[in-house]
Amino acid sequence: MAESTTPPGGSRRGVLFDVDGTLIDSSYIHTVAWWGAFRQYGHDVPMAAIHRLVGMGGARLVDQLLPSGRDREEDEDIMASHGALYASHWPTLRALDGAKDLLGRCHTGGVAVALASSARQRDLEVMRSVLDADAFIDAATSANDAEESKPAPDILEAALKAVGVDAADAVYVGDAVWDMKAAGALGIPAIGLTCGGIHAAELREAGAVEVYDGPRHLLQNLGTSAIGRLLPLEPRS
Picture (spheres, one colour):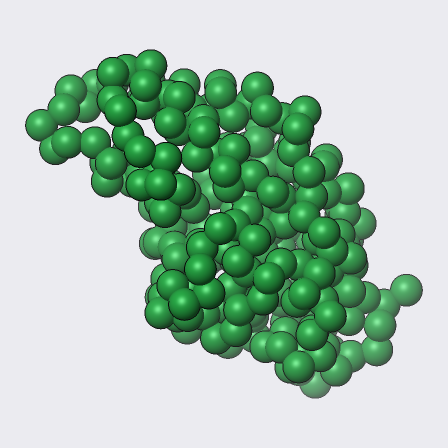
C-alpha cells in the first residue's frame, strides 16, 4: 500500500478513480456478459441498451432493463450469471494506455490515490493485478463498501473516508454518466474519459468538468486539468 502525505498547513488531497472502462478496457466485456446473462433467462436485451447502463450497480441495471412485472426472484441469478460470464474474460483484461502512468504521476505529485470501484471484490482484485500499480494506490473500494451503487455517491464516500480526504479536496475520474452523477452529488469535480464508449457530450451533460479520450490523454494534460490544482507539492520518491 502506498504511503500518502498531507501538505504542510493544508488539507490532504486525493484523486478517486473508477476502474472498469476508466483504467481497465472492460466496458464492452461487461456489456457482452450482461447480454449473455439476460439471454440465459429468456430476456433479449439489445447490447446498445446494456452498454449505456454499464457503470451503475448490477441490481439497478437489471431493474432498468427488465419489465417491472418480471419474476424478480431471477434477478440474483441473472447477476450471478453475469459475474460468471465476466470472470471467463479475466485472462483478456488489459489496462488502458497510460493508466498505470497516470496513477503513478498522481502519487508522485503528493496526493492520495483511491480506486472508487463498485466492482465485486474478486473482480477488483483481478483488475488491480492487471493494472500492476499497487505501489501508487492508497485505498480501493468494492461493492462491499456501499449500500447503494452509482449513481448514488456511496462508493465515493467510502473511498474518501478510506484515504482521509474531504470532498472539497478531491477530483474524480470516470467513464460513465453514473460516475459523473455520483461525483456531482458530493460536489466533487468529475473528469470524464470516453474510453468506456460514452460520448463526450453525454459526459458533460451529466456533469463532467473536462473530458479526455483516455488515461494517456489526461496524463498529457494533467497540469491544466482539474487534477492540476491538487499537484503543487514536491514529488514523492
